[in-house]
Image (cartoon, rainbow, N blue to C red):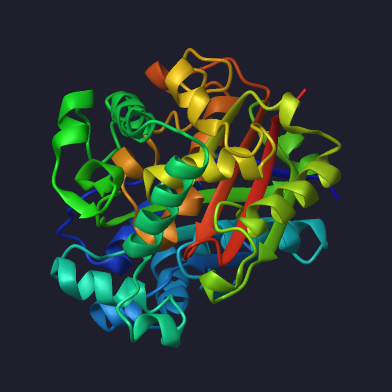
Length: 383
């Protein structure tokens, strides 16, 4: 059964006074309005959230949201797939409609993080890693630093190529009123910022963020009855890589990205050359390169050339992270993958404002941990 997205919303990302329940409710309510759907029409409600219990002692967020939105007695479920929880929520919502189990499914993703210290938040996020790695102090930033060093040396890539990713995504974020950072940065500022995990510096990392985002899914048949402006989920795939990162044959190949994108392409009957715009999980700048290669847009070891040539800029051959990406928009864990879906949906229906590019086919890739689990989604504009 064809699955369509007919509405989307996103709260302001950044440091928010609101708690997780309020953030989820705001995005959910705005999505209902955007889709023109009454609360009692919602049959399934999915909430993408990684760690509301760890961050603020709040569990049962799906039950609370169902009550707050007035969607009772809809089936509700919390989806946790670490930092790819949002993408996993898209997969769950797509399955619920495609299977015929639901004709109207609301997905809301969110996380409240900024009230914790950087050390506390980092420790919660680091729980994603394998216990044997964690006890030796190996965190996601350290994985990123080691992989970036290996990539730059192995493929003779200049350090400036990573800085260009940060500069590009900050520039895109200026045009996103919901982004955490709406300011440009210079190459000099990116290259001279403090070292976090050599060779990666401060501006190679995304921020700790509060925020929520939502999408409304329904059947293609019902979408046509409701609106002329909708997008079709034509392909979706999910995959899992080794939990222990050093067990991978090549640390510069994200196997979960490769496998999930191949699944999505096959389902959609499309390939890398058909993409017009993409949202990639740039938790660290190096991940934009690894995902460009994983989704087949660039050969291994060549994605850095796209950054240097401007091919991934908003006016380039394949605009990447027009939203500002996690780097500028922010990374509220459970919301990030949903927000990626919001961006590609808005691009396809022509609602991206100053970020708008010409696009009929779009891809979003949401990564959990350091490639431990990945969801790739392809949407197409309705004909």
